Length: 198
Figure 1: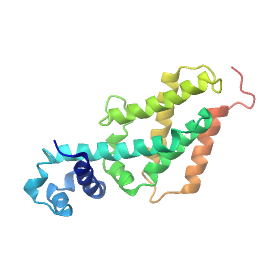
Figure 2: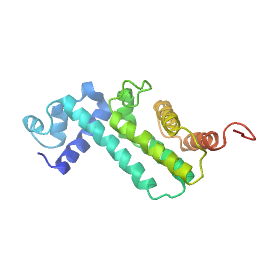
Figure 3: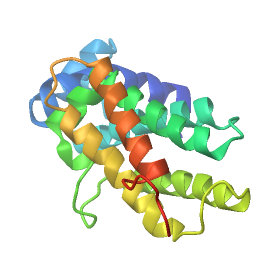
């Protein structure tokens, strides 16, 4: 079995190629050259270009997952944790040129249709992470009782919507991102009614 560090080195080298040129135009020869290895040797790390591409996507999204966890896991207040989770999750992807290029070249990574999801493991993780924050908030009496399965799925849908709409931007508009997250948090935490009642 190949060492994890070696896999990460391969994925790090391959990510910019798949991001810039997309799956079709990237060749294993490009990636082998970037790693200073022979074309034949790259096949000891990946069965095929498709296998390598899937590994790169899983690696890139795994990096995003770790970043979100590392920046929010120690936050005790459920409201702050929920809002920071959105800020870090959105900010990481929109602020990462390789991730944005990868999503532009392959929008199926964040599909709007729930039955087509090539990275279901990571997208499910995101929904479960939000669900755990909602459950913690309900338990602490910060959030009202609600169906956390429905709420976490809806919130993840908002997140995907922000990312998908950001794909058309040439560069990160920090002001627009701040306004979007502020508006989302106002809707999420306060609702639309001036005097919200159940």
